[in-house]
Length: 141
Image (cartoon, rainbow, N blue to C red; front, side):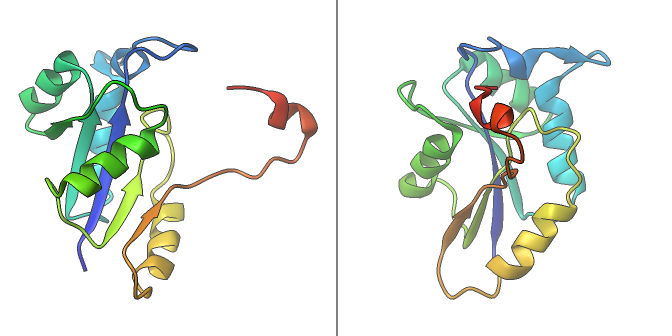
């Protein structure tokens, strides 16, 4: 079973423009997220889906794989689905790893994959957090 990880990147975010390129310890946030996904050893492919030539060039400069997506997507899941439907990359299970979850342990994904890999269908997965307070639900961030 082939498991793919897609890191969707859009530089024109309203809340934090160019977040993926924000430097942390001399490297862009995107690099650390990509490295975390690669080092997790959970995926056969770790790729970036972006509408930005700047991001594409950056990812390929460190040896990563990147694919172009259209600018009109409203979510990272839509970028992943574009890649899935284009058949530019094949996989049985697809994981959407958001660029700002760089500190996330691979453990929740590993647990999710244990379930996904026993499924008979192709699937797209995205982790989430439960809301415990109404103010968390109302916070657009």
